[in-house]
Image (cartoon, rainbow, N blue to C red):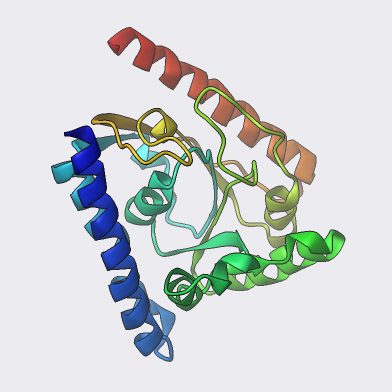
Length: 241
C-alpha cells in the first residue's frame, strides 16, 4: 500500500506541476502580489495529497518567531517536502536556486513566474554578487527570501558545510534571518520514491539580527541553532519510535 499511495501522490504532483506551471506562465505579466495567490495553490495541493493519501502530516513549533518584517529564511534541506511547506508557513517568498532549474520543462517555467533568486553557481564570486543584488531587490519588494545554506539536500542525520552567501546577503541588506529546522528527510528522503506516514516536526527559531554584523557571525548563529535543534528533533523522533 505504501508503494501504491506514493505512486498516486507522484501522479498528482506531476499533474499539478504541469497545470500550475501553465497557469503561472499565463499570469506572469501581472503584479507578483496577485500571482502569489496562485503560486500557493501548488504547495497546497501537494501537502493536501501527502496528508490524505500518504498519511504524512506536519506540526509547526515557534510560529510566534515569525516577524512582521520581511526576512531571510535559512532552512535545513533534507527533502522536496520543505519546498512545499515553507510556502504555506511563511509569507510570499522567493527561493534562491541554481539557474539550471529554470530550464526544466513546465517546472522551470512555473518556477520562473515566482520570481526566484536564480544564480549561476559556477560564477564564483560573481554568484555572490548576483545573490546580494537579486535577493536585496526581492526583500525590498516585501518578498521573503528562502535559502538552503547547505546548498543541496542532505540525508537525515547528516550535515554539510554551511555556505556564506546567504549570510552575506543578510549582512549587506540588513534584513534579519529566521532559522528553520525540520526532519522531513526521515519520512521523504532525498531521491526516494516512498513517502512514509507520520508527522514531520518543523521548528522556527528566534530572529537573528544582521545589522552591523559580520557574515561569519550571522552564519555561525544560524548554523548553531539549526544543528542543535536538529539533534533535539532527532532525539524526540527516536524516543517516539
